[in-house]
Amino acid sequence: MPSAEIITIGTELLLGEIVDTNSAFLARKLRDIGVDVYRTSTVGDNQTRISEIIKEAIARTPIVITTGGLGPTIDDPTRDAIALAMDLPTEFRPELWEQIVTRLEKFGRAPTENQKRQAFIPKGALSIHNPVGTAPAFIVEQDKISVISLPGVPREMEYLTENSVLPYLRGRYQLTGTIKTRILHIAGLGESQIDEWIGDLEMLGNPTVGLSAHPGIVDVRITAKAESNDQADSMIANVEEALRSRLGNSIFGADEDSIEDVLFDIIDKKDLSLAVLEAGMAGSLVQKLSRVRSNRFEGGEVIPEIPEDTTLLEATLRELDARHASLALGICLIPQAGQQDVEIVIITPAGEQNIKRSYGGHPRYGPTWAVNMALEFLRQELVK
Image (tube, rainbow, N blue to C red; front, side):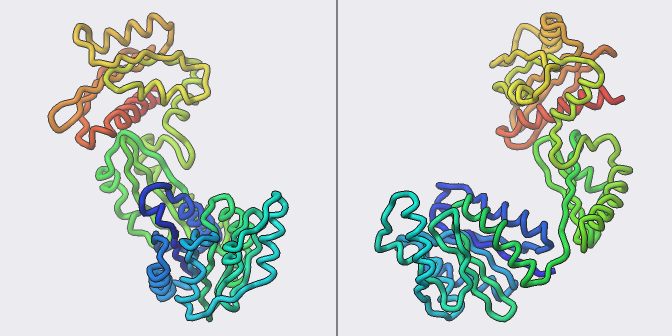
């Protein structure tokens, strides 16, 4: 399977004015057709620096995809930079200019003189017709190398990738394989503990297994390279079975599953309902649960400050009585020196629990961690 690098171009990216979403889109699409992405990079609108980074990329990999810098202005230097990197002159393509003029006329606009720059591409390059924008894209081929230049506007880039770039790559590199990923979600366990239990599986070559930690949740990623989707699915299933045998009920879902959606699926099946109360968390719990489409959520109360004259347990009991819910969940987040303490209260038909934990990460992520931990404790209680 060939490898690729993605280069996003634009000073606005380096200044933090916009967020690069193009790399993630391209990486997913390349993965689906069996192309490994080994590196992504961002460079500003400077012809010399763009040229240098392209030279570095083609020395490592046969497929280089750039996005951005194809507009009509002086600070859109990608065309000239790629020509410089590939040691080619640029040439005017009348057919590209005609496409630009025709598209502008469709919207009642006359082309400006500087838009002719967009009709210049490296000599001998394959042009990619752009029916959703004015910037022509192109591909420069040299031996086994393909440098593909796409517009930076996400809508245009995505359309051209789906309709032109992926078919081109399949044919050019005779791609028949795929790379598939399955993500298992775990709550209530730390990354180091999970690593202790599955470390040998993380040493596999294909499929590969990797960990990604988030506040209160750890993702276990299984990635398989195969000649077909069915083969990849089979390879992933074997590893997933081994992971589930070791991690058990700590795995609450996979892929697009969220802890709150999974919890409410259980609540619905058990014909229960949930009311919540939180203190010192600025509405994090109520906001998260309010996004779930379920009539099993009875709502909740937010106490801005940590209560002094009552315990969280007593406040949660009052919330339960007031809303006639069959389940109640309360969270109180208490800042301390160097950490945040959380008190979690769970009330179910089976009884009451009062759980205390401490969080030593960045205070900004404390509420997210507390919410995910609390929802996992409640889920575990319901699946006993």
